Image 1 (cartoon, rainbow, N blue to C red):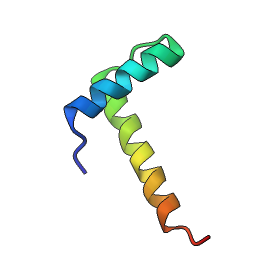
Image 2: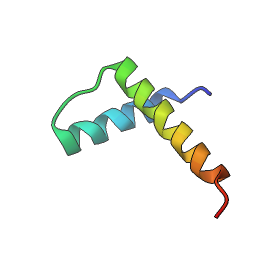
Image 3: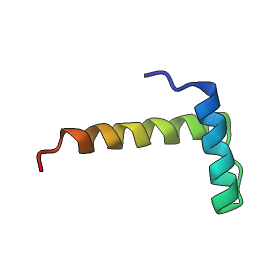
Image 4: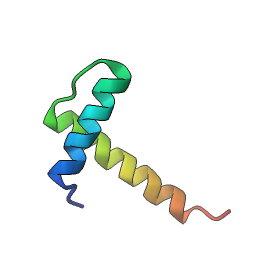
Length: 47
């Protein structure tokens, strides 16, 4: 799955605002992929 560059930049801004630390491009990309994988898993879980 390809995450748009705008989404990565938005994630970096949010992370900086919330935690006061900057993410590198690769850290933000990895974090975004993990988040999407989590949502995908949750969507498949029967309720």
